[in-house]
Length: 388
Image (cartoon, rainbow, N blue to C red):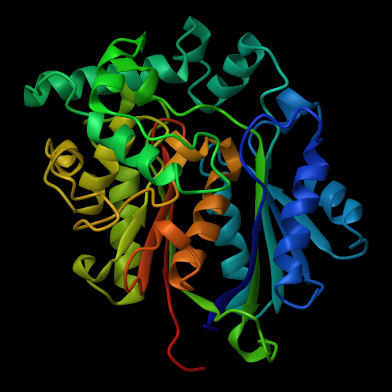
């Protein structure tokens, strides 16, 4: 297969963009990514989105965004896999380039959420669960995550506020990310005083939904342009896996089997060991998801993922830094665009462009986006390149 590289990245600030449309957000990110390549025109555009048909009354985003950004005539398609849409769009682009069918591609993830009222947003978000057995009963995504977290706490007899470290770490990193929605660190006392959303999940265990767009420009190794302003980042592996959508259909509801399988395959394809990973961008839609993702990847045994947060092992200077730009919790959760934000952030880390949140000597990064309550997992391994 052909080597595939990230040669341009762009992203908008994450937040409530009342004065920006979905297509305008996408345009900003896509233009920024193309600018880093010298304004190259991609052969294909892959759009990651989860909620536009429900909240913006807009589907057909591939054609819409390619046309709006001045690329009429090229191949373009939208990819949907709930919260894993971004990772799956990156995977489809990677496959196209690795196979040799496409030379260059632009992947963009975009969501416009906050202009809708809470009831509409909840109704849209719950479409990623099982309609016949979960959402028909009015169970929200937060309620499903709370049931998973409640079982985890019971099963492993966790102390109160065991998950606080995830939120504290995310906000510490987000405070130094100029694109983050929330840029203030929090203390343990702040977490402890937070209101309960769905017991035992409190306000700081759940990421805020937000608007935003992120884009990456991909090129095969044999067509890399000369004189790029920043070193290319290689995609060493791409993998994806699924498990049951409905939580009650899983043999073990407190184990992310899709995430585990995707990481295992990615490590095998990259021909590396877990201890070679320098940082891990997890999809921390809820703090319990961060703990389960760490366990699924193999960084912690079952029931011990939370201990990595408590001990500081997930901090920028820790054993396995996670959510280095604040993750969904502090950056803001952009739904189907999250996986593309993760790819942009990982590329910036590997290029040494992360500023105050730079992971020292970062050479290999692991990113993973999740759909629903972990039913879909899209995983990629990215690395620096010594010579080309």
